[in-house]
Length: 321
Image (cartoon, rainbow, N blue to C red; front, side, top):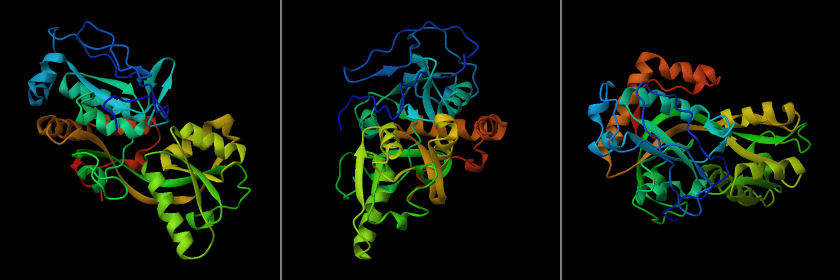
């Protein structure tokens, strides 16, 4: 993985929807690497007035107190978690970040990149955190790839959302797919570098072991490309987190393109990823998340997006399997 994050147009060029906080700040354009597609259009100049009166401002490392900004790597093509609308990045993650910003007294500035380069952006210091509907897994915590080989030093996760995965299929379900086992002998599409690709790989192994036919996997840079493949009939299914699959099925071409097959499987936590050396920031984020859960601000975000069944009761660290 490279240090800079390219647009995964999975999804996002996230312009943060972080609502304005009550103190005026001078904004600067966020500069980027050549492969960065888009970013938030603002950054808070170092030395401007800080929201030091925010409840948890003192918990932050001085670096973020001085900057007034926490840089967030994301992939803004993953509605309703994060996506671009009207020149801004909106969705569940930006709204949760806005609530965290009220507690911490800083602005969360989202920049969109390719999903499989987001963790490396933490290791190189390009971003401070990742909020991208990223599943907390032991492999990511340890810096391992899907073969168990080390690809980095790993990250810590502050877990803030629970979700299972669901199959997204063409409207009308012409292939009669209701479960992963129904995919044997067929072709599927998926976004590269996601846990969904790992799920399909595990199913392909199972199909081969059970002698039920080869499961062919086509991986794409963005989930939007995978969806297009399914819509065209070139693949029978895509795999996504249930809230995302349900949102796509409901909104794509007015609900005429896709449907969700079967129920949720493999439920687990999404986490805010932080470099393992950045423990003070990690702990401040955990405390802020617990504060917005207690205040009800977290619940309001989930109610807005109709995902209350994915709520957590408290923020945990590295609870993924």
